[in-house]
Amino acid sequence: MCHHGMRSAQMCGWLAQQGFTQLNNLTGGIEAYSVLVDRTIPRY
Image 1 (cartoon, one colour):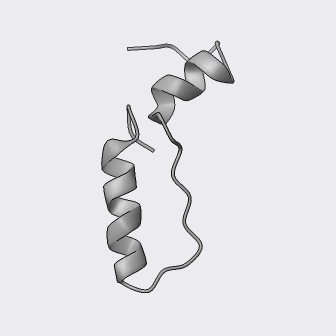
Image 2 (image 1 turned 60 degrees about the vertical axis):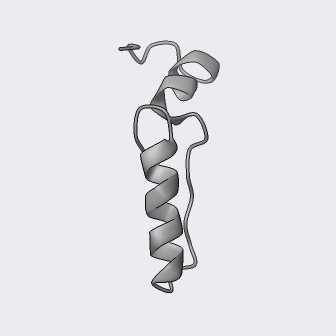
């Protein structure tokens, strides 16, 4: 995970090119998670 999901999406793409198949990316990053799922996680 990363703050807004861009770097982790890039890493998922790179890992997929390396042959990894079980990958997940949190769209919107931890920022979106803290807004949409768990408001106890501080936003920064």
